[in-house]
Image 1 (cartoon, rainbow, N blue to C red):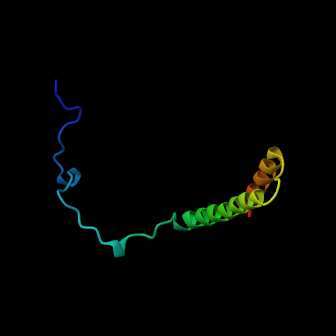
Image 2: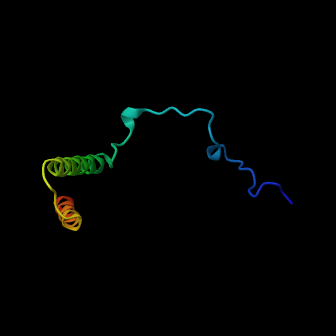
Image 3: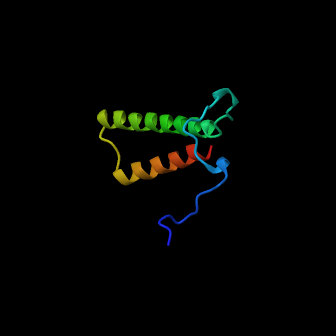
Length: 82
């Protein structure tokens, strides 16, 4: 019985090369860039809302925690859908 589960390939095309030459100019554009930028913009908007909420709590009595969380979730959903 062989110690390796696969037979050695006789085709040199299947072998790994010691070095690969990569030309970045020939590479396809990253298809996830726009999605990443959109997500980052969303995170930045949420960060601003959270900072505004914290600032308002420091200058007033605040609101009920459940009310705040429900309003925040509603705002987040609206921003995400737009």
